[in-house]
Amino acid sequence: MTWVQALNKVKYELLMLLVLVGYATQYYLEIYSISSKRINLLLVEPVYWALMLCAVALITQKVRAAKSSEQIGLSNQEAGQPNSARRQFYRDAFVFSVLTLIYALALDRIGFVVSSFLYLALLTYSLGARKIWLTIALPAAVVGFIYVSMSIFLRFSLPEGILI
Image 1 (cartoon, one colour):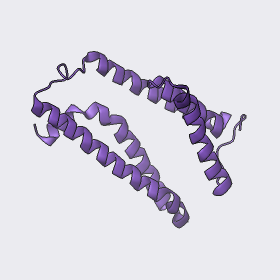
Image 2: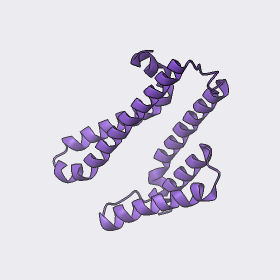
Image 3: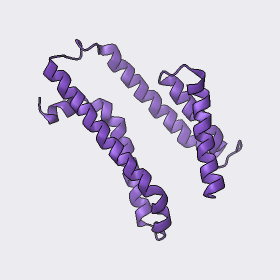
Image 4: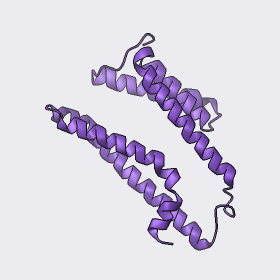
């Protein structure tokens, strides 16, 4: 199996990753084109390049896994990935897209803290996490860290709505 065939085999799994990379690239190029880019790039550029490295590593890992499973002689059915796994993937992608759209629309209306917490909690729950610390405590810690680091230390204003 060639690399192109292996990439074709995992194309649906990588679709959301490529959408994220495309959006991040568009955002990076917008920041790069503004006049005070030195300060803005200081915040955005390290995150962008870390995202790019992780994306390349993930794509490489997925393609290698698809290539090695084909060389072993396992098809999707033999590897324990029946059509229900594909349906689950489409359901997860749909839920992710809907929650992300709702989050983007609600961010300015109800505020960063509440909308981000609800988004992360609902997303982790809908993707299969059932432990309380994973669905409640982890989103609270992430949102708290972002709020403290951005609002207090960097004095960056986050969207404020009716609820904070």
